[in-house]
Length: 354
Image 1 (cartoon, rainbow, N blue to C red):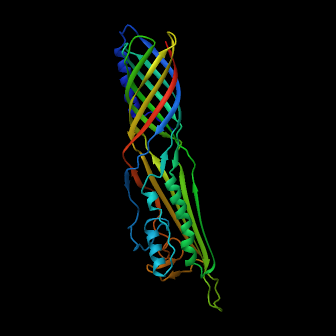
Image 2 (cartoon, rainbow, N blue to C red):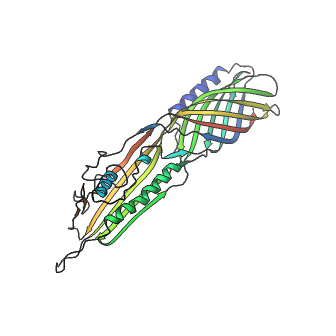
Image 3 (cartoon, rainbow, N blue to C red):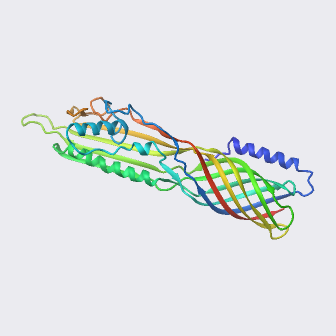
């Protein structure tokens, strides 16, 4: 649920003080406006990224084969046993902006108070419909990683009993609107006539609404281990799953407002307005990683080691017997966005003065 927060309260205090200071002005009036328009959003790519683990192929256990230590361990092992396949690590996706803000329409309302013929104080509440969307670069990289999981593991398990390898990717659609709550001071550049151009200066808060897209990679392999004839125990079956979830976290952010436009009075009470504003805020979009490995053996006593360099171990979950079984990664920020984000909004509205 969206809350007002400290910045809009601060803006509201400024507006109240300005309105109170104008109580003795000869020309006092209120304006209420509804408007619609379109908002263009920039997408800065600057930021800092980091991955969990040692970032080397010496890790004894890994939380996933898809990224970081897991991809390094698997590729090193494949090279040591003279297999030409490799897994395409998800690292570039995790260490970069995972989503981008699309441009889109918007609607809003403004409440203004004419302080003097030259100045007007107003409060604006805008809803921007441009959603967050997984970047094309991220989509291509996720698909490359998904496909390479199968091509990397299939030859490793080809000599086992009934091997199966799968890798699935799901990517969320566009979602996540924005809400802008700002206060501004309008400076009229002309105080006579029906047409009044103006400049606008202000500040406020921009808040995300409705979540953000999520992508998930789910890899799985299962195979049996043949036993010599005459051993009176069931042949063990190994089954391991590798699930990685990537999403974005969008924080509320302070925003400055610069803009301008014009009002045209149709009568003493009604008028139209065209307005362009740039909402300037810090980049508050981060990339967040979750990884949950699982390993099981039926019956639960089976252990297999492939003597590669480093070795690949398969065993029951919850032990160090399986290479895939490191500490799960829970909501770790792998990329923190920096820089300045601009939302340039053009709007056309109808206002009522009373």
